[in-house]
Image (cartoon, rainbow, N blue to C red; front, side, top):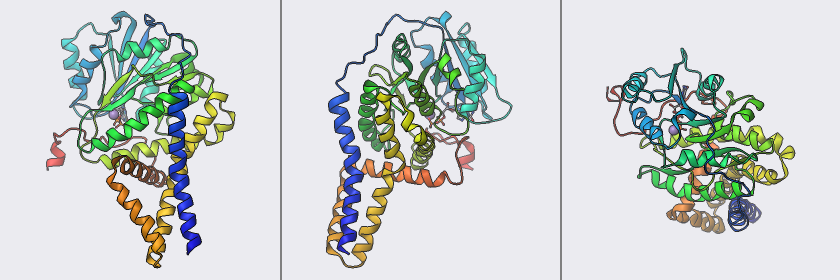
Amino acid sequence: MEILVIIALALAIVHFGIPLSYYFIARRSWLPLPWRVKRDESYRPKISIILPTYNEEKIIEKRLDNIFSQRYPRDLLELLIIDSSNDETVEKIEDWYRRHEGFPLKLMHESERRGKAYALNEALKISTGEIAVIADADAFWEEDALPEAISWLSDASVGAVTCLKRPMNDGSAKIEGSYRNYYNVMRLAESKKFSTPIFHGELAAFRKDLLEKIGGFPTDIGSDDSHTATMIAMNGYRSIAPEGVLCSESVPEKGYGEWRIRRAQHLVQHFSRMLSHIGIAPEGFRKILAIETYLHIFNPWLLIIAAGILVYGALEGSSLSDLLLGSGLLLLLYSPYRTWVATQLYLMMGAVRNIWTKEIAWEKQEKYRKRTNEAIK
Ligand code: GDP
Ligand code: MN
């Protein structure tokens, strides 16, 4: 029995020790690094903003207002909306356009819904910009996020730029909030070191020649944003989340868990695919990719195995198991720990769920209080 408890303890130490050490080392050694990027704030290439939409009737007009309010020369941008909705999204976009005639907007409708990445690739084919900026309907760009993001691409070594995230509503979003603190520090530190393998579809700007080189967005896995940025980093370019580029997103009030599991599923798909590439990653990126892959695919399981052993030990009457299990449960009162444990559960559930569904075309999450007629019926 004792040996089992020691194994459980060792697993728990590894489970918490690796990410904590990674966090502290990244914060101390990478976060203070200079960017090593020559940034021209007046850089204004032609850009194509690509906004895929699936049943976004409730939010789309606000989102268009938000994109409209970004300071970027109108003659140097195009907004390509690629829609596969079966609600009133298209009508809402047309209404909005009537009030903003002259805004360089192109609306395409897909005859069939084939998932977000497929839609992005369709828009990419007709885009004319040097830079493709991916947007998402239920997020918002903070003031000047767009010109800020673009300015980082003035340096030829930067291939992709994403935003740091702030959740919009509170409530279940509290977990989301504390998760993001740790999370944003990591994105920033990895970006300064070289590149971050996790990107945000809420605002992700890619150099188009590089997108073409890697064959566009992957349509067979879900994390189109992170995977694309990572492939760009694999080609030796920086994929970064700089501090001045901020976006906020709404968090589902209902179905928060399902939402997190779906996103976890996509990250697991992305990192599983990267597993065989770690050895050939560019020097500055290898360690980041190796650790993040480990943290997303393997590390969560150590926690559940340790917990399983301790439960078994407790049932067998081991008081050391009682003590360790009790401390682990008591710590759940501490919110960063609770957030961490929840994230591990989402990653494991995501990995298991990947066995039967990849969630390439996912159910639209209700992120607003207003219910659809269907839900009321
Ligand atoms: P989340 O941010 O991970 O919760 O994902 P969302 O549900 O917000 O989806 C991201 C963006 O892709 C949103 O603007 C969706 O409307 C859009 N989207 C999702 N699935 C599809 C699809 O199958 N086709 C198209 N055209 N857009 C999609
Ligand atoms: Mn979204």
